[in-house]
Length: 502
Image (tube, rainbow, N blue to C red; front, side, top):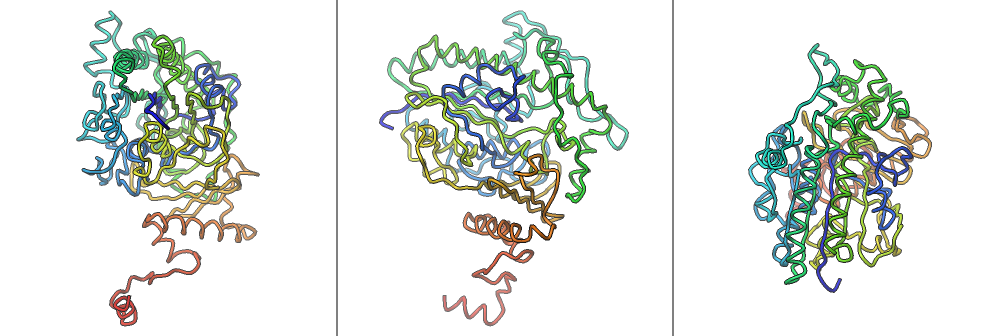
């Protein structure tokens, strides 16, 4: 890369890959994102490092895996982990500012509680929290400026908790026009920022990084009529994993299903929820379209790389679950990932295992900054360019808890997925014969060789990375030879003398 390049980073929250036409949904209303895929690169094995908002977003900002940056849970459900990125830790935004970039972030931050996006060099309104902050002063000023009605909802959809109380709100009808939605507001603020940055880009040539982070399609799905009713629930094909029995699986999954009240609602309610979720994606696609039109009007298209991805996926009834949580299924770990770079070929489709983490090194390389500072990240530019590149044939993901501490590690290869659950049964899925991950094959005798290979491979990767989860595996599983005393009995005479000799 010989000169800095503008970057537009489009991000959603809790977004399934199968909601986009580009990923095979024939009913999807996503023409803008489908066009981005058609004119750029689509990644078919794009994963989040962890399916929880704050840790995933902290990984994007730092280029570090969650176990390394240690911001491991959302503030709203924090169970004792740190809540802000430690002082002095590398962030790509600081590097871009030092390079002379304008940096803006419009929308969801959710990377910390004490530190805001502004503390990391981003321009834009402070919009804290996990859901659309409809009481935010800047949003209320936007409504007043355009004489738009205030937020009001009806037709709430929710189940019943095991305690007998009302479950979490899953969806509702919004009594505002599209122009008053928080999504339209965010796109408007992004366009205004683009206009400011564009003037400085052309004269005196100051590049920009602008992130537009929507809070949706995270639940609850709250939409105006046009999008709440956009899809007929009768046209929705239910995911095969609604047949989940939880047999042979960690009990926490069944408990989580009860927490999300799946079985207390008719199956037709699940169809409606999926239809509304698709409508939410369509609304966001429409607003992204407004931003892309502004890019064209401002003459920025030919010098601006455009990313689209999200922090993690969403269950929407798959495995009789909603939201995300302690279950490392494809629904919440595999996400959409699109990238268009000016001058690179169109219509590229890649099947390498890549990660949200890899965006960090890619952003740095686009800006002609050393990407090695993003230590767990690797630039995607060779793949975008259609090059042959040596790439890992696996991905490792992690989870540390949300409503409660719950450590997990996952190894995903092209055919198999291993999930290690220290408190419970492990999981092994054959994604070739069981893409819906309904049958846990971990204990099947015929899977012993695969199980051993996967356990040893995960152990080796975690140990190489310095993820101390591997200590648990050393004592519990057949991980092969180890080069240290797994009992940590440092006062044993032989161990002590051996340590002194070293």
